[in-house]
Amino acid sequence: MKAVAYARFSTDRQREESITAQLRAIHEYALKNNIHVVREYLDEGRSATTDDRPAFQQMFSDLEEVRPNLVLVHKLDRFARDRFDSAYYRREIQKAGARLVAVDQPLDDSPESAFLEGILEAQAEFYSRNLAREVMKGMKENAFKAKFNGGRAPLGYDIDSEGHYVINEDEATTVRLIFQMKLTGKSLNSIVDELSCQGRRTKAGKPFGKNSIDAILRNERYSGTYVFNEIPKKIAGKRNNRVKNPEDKIIRVEGAIPAIIGREDWVAVREMMEACKHGPRRRSDTLYILTGLLKCGECGAAMVGNTATKTVNGSIKKYHYYECSRAKRTGTCANKKRYPQEKLEQSVLKFIESQLIRPENRDAMVDRLWEAIRMINDSSETECANMAKQLQTVKEQMDRVVDSIKKGLPFEHMSSYFAELGEQKKYLEAQLGNRQSIFTDVTRQDVHNYMKRQQGRLVTTASAETRKDIVTSYVKEATVLGKSIDIVLKLQLGSLDKAGVGGGT
Image (tube, rainbow, N blue to C red; front, side, top):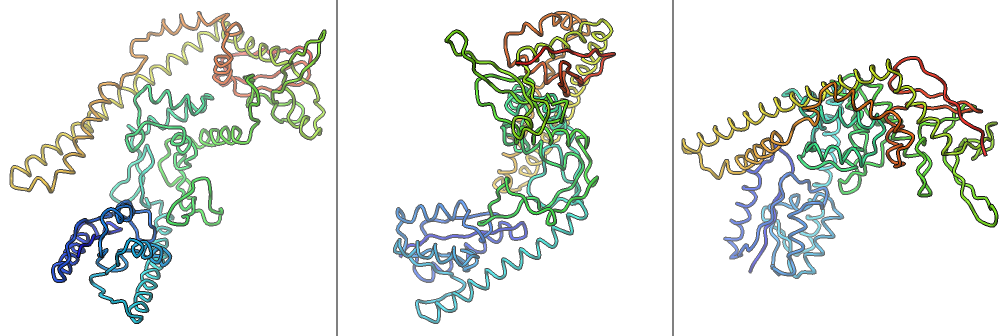
């Protein structure tokens, strides 16, 4: 008679010894009953309240191939703590012509045994749910003290010995860069591309994607606010990050975590992302470069791009323009004017250009750009120094492992740890080899010459995407009413004129 064995543990308190003890009991039972165990399936750190266990699922995938007579577990609660899962997977075992046996709870096929199994399964489920309730109590107490509640710390933070968040300065530079790029109006794709070019990685050492950037920009912890229980636990232990708990179930403790991002900047980014989420969608190939920046001077609503067609001499022509979204949607705004797209956008670009052409403003801009470049270069040097320290620590840890092996510690006890250190060493060496500021060789005169070259080029730039980048880089907001447009720049360089705009269609 042949069998497969399944064992698991779910918490740090159970650890590997629990797996070893389970397998020992299973093999002792098999030896006494002349059973040959042909395969073992082990799940480490996996709860039986869900069937989302890799080895568990692999075992059921292999049943048809292996065709065992028995599936051996130590106790029924190692197999499942959910009665529905238990009944379903027992049925799957029966379909494969096998039988589930808990070696430490020997039961036969009698009605009495079936009744007892039901009691044991109900007891296991009660234990699991009661434990979850008690664990939640402890986690809430931790939350009110702003202590870490498990999982992986967010990028930019480590957890100290007392469970408190502390800033990881090497990672925090990446977080600050992400927020800075978003504040300048860059899209998630642009941020991903920039981080990829710089060789930056997530907490797990993987390349950034749109979802990981989105999660960082929405994480309130970066502003210093501790947040717990924001996302509910779903069926089978899975979570849906798009669903939020009611506010009365969420614990927030402001100022409890060292902030990486200023609160005002975090709120500004959140508002930008909400505006993109609920804002008007592009319905054509035309890019309206003022979208998200332009407001109606009459009611304060967003100005949106639209297209109209006219028949001229038998030919249909398209006209692109901006109009008040409230006037268009509800008709409750008195500003019914349509502003020609090209004329309005040219007015904004010319205004930006006029401010940069002024010698005093150009010099101020050069000063600001040069200071920003110096900060980037200093940040790059700091990152390299931090990574060099980390690399030295990893090398010292590897040396200690080698010394322990020389003193007689079996290598198999340290092999996985040594391999992990080796991967960290390889990653840090690669990062140090690639990490260099792109502005290392740039001088202040280079910046001055660049600004001079930009004069007269804004309006004639052919690419609409480039114009969009220019506007989002310089303009904080713009308000249009009648024949005037008020523009607020992100960098106030000196006295500003008002831009004018022509009549509407």
